Image 1 (tube, protein in one colour):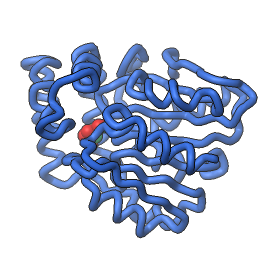
Image 2 (image 1 turned 135 degrees about the horizontal axis):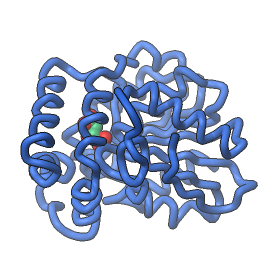
Image 3 (image 1 turned 30 degrees about the horizontal axis):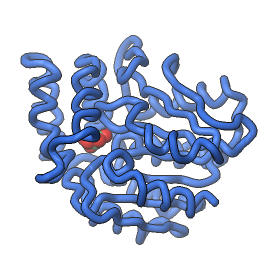
Length: 253
Ligand code: MLT
């Protein structure tokens, strides 16, 4: 269930559902909402356990996050949408298009990857959970922020906005999300089954899901377009809205 989401733009326009990354919230998409909701009906949910959507009871996996979105679409009476996701939101989007291809018209992947976590990555997730349990969100933010923003971009409005989103996140919801990401499926084999036109956007300086991961998806998805955003780190839609919005407009037009 997703109680916290916002709809923007004309209800009778094609819907673009945008899924934020970890541990952010729907405000991560504020520049896309500002620039694109004249033409598209945009829905920005807070994913389970993040933003203002509660974590609910019990374990969380990517499957439950997909189930939440299916419920949201039913609630909104929507049978076909454009689906976009950044990083963790991209993991959810890739799983959703694999499970429910009939619901997706076009797919947009921002700063994300199709591979499951490496061994090192899983050990890192466990370390993140330990940090959250013992030291809290501020300590997680301290370790994460330098990976999200390249040197020289670690101040200013976009940096402050992401820092604030992280600090406002529920530490238990963030632990759930780390478990969900660590246990997600490897979807590299699923890429060749994606028949939807797909836009892949990546920051040239993205350390967490680097351009090589985006290039691999571009090579595997039959009908994909790749946009590398010069100078951007891991949250290109927030830090470099103009080239990202231009790529989205061109792709969806
Ligand atoms: C995100 O931005 O959603 C995360 O960095 C993804 C991840 O940790 O794999």
